[in-house]
Image 1 (cartoon, rainbow, N blue to C red):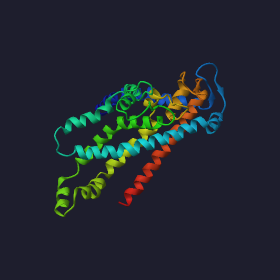
Image 2 (image 1 turned 90 degrees about the horizontal axis):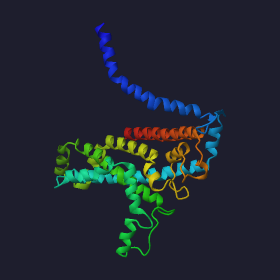
Image 3 (image 1 turned 180 degrees about the horizontal axis):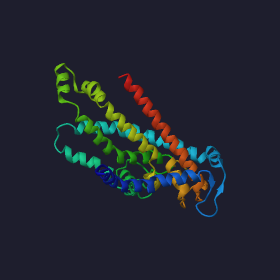
Image 4 (image 1 turned 90 degrees about the vertical axis):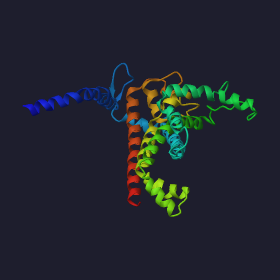
Length: 300
């Protein structure tokens, strides 16, 4: 009797979390999976259409353009943020004055609202009266205003903003890994004549392997599903140059005045099918990374 009472008491602690997960997580997924097979605009009658939504997905050039943009955005973010985070972690792991303050400053963007951060950077990169253009023109570094959010530079701009927001988090994780490496290893290698660069190449990088695998996995997932700052800064424009997968899905469920021709009408049914295909793409990339990282670790 006491065992049953203790068990019921224990489950009562996780019941609120289970209810929230069911209501806010499981139910919306089940709802979306049902409407994948319906022509449903979010209002009016539902019409069962079978796999027609999926047929439409594979013919939707705007969606596949967003897939390509997502890979460009994710690749740029990974290539810039992870090496930069590692370098900063190594530097701020040294015994230098004010390192805790510097760590806090670099980590600060991680806790700032993405929407607020994007609004600030929009004012910086604004083509007409942006702070960056004014600064560059004042010191004669450019002759005329650069359209940082235009066709040529918009993707680079949103990638740089994403790197600024992510590098502090990855730096902190690298710092945790660096502080778990015993000092004795470095001291022994120094006695054998290894310099700082050799210690970094043959000690730091290999011993950070497990931490780096986790950081790369988190970075891939976050980069593939990121869209908030892009929505605020460019809304996927101009002409779809920064339209990424999750932003495209968002516009199908919550269309805005600036949406493209294919996304001006709310389409819950089609949006559910696109969301499912998007989730499959992210899942496949994650599985491939897991498989690849596992294979690489076998040869270390």
